[in-house]
Length: 291
Image (tube, rainbow, N blue to C red; front, side):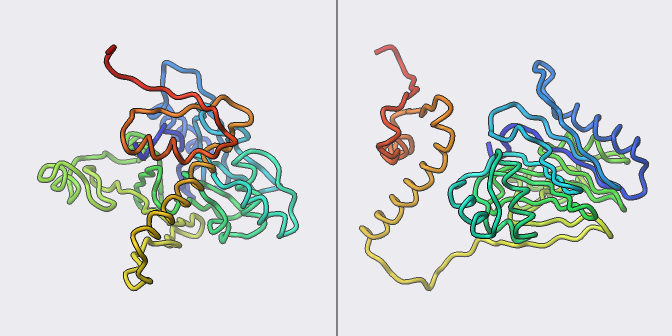
């Protein structure tokens, strides 16, 4: 699932009273929370904005909200490639420390909105600089983030029901997304089956302050005129990228037990073969018939 565990919810409404925003935020968090578990539910608010995050403890982001002076940051998901990020921060004159949320805020302080160019991983981020709030999706839309923009109110959440809980008006089925769902059994692009609710596209920064402004900082493009290579060169290049990605995902192996799900299919075998030798032996979890 691209959405993973539902974590992040937020509401922006410059005309709303702080108490109203917090009441709306509580209702949204309750809508996406798991009642059988007692997960931490940190919240943070500023002028006209309130954000909440449910932390199941799966990712290394327990410092939330990360703070520095008037700035704060909430992160849904996780950063990968932290060695490179720390090197970029040191080169900019900063001392990197803390978990994913703290490092992301430090990158924002170091590079401004260009901090997205230094972040790898699967995440949605909400960052506030003291005056404006920015909602940022990663380059590939790894974790879904739905939104509704009704007048001056902008609400967002990892799940549709979180957005529905934060809207002032009723949410009804309809629109192109409903036609797509009924005719093709799926959605395409940013559409949903609820009128007025859509997905924030990948690689997007939404600025909340003097109105709502949206900017795409990244779009996936195919390099159709790139240099031709042999099949062996493509395979070697893919093997390098896969090994690099696997190494990034083992970032907590020195602190926590790590395992790989091994079905025996091509995907899991390829990942198993890409594990760097310094992490072996590694526990594998498999399944199947008794024979």
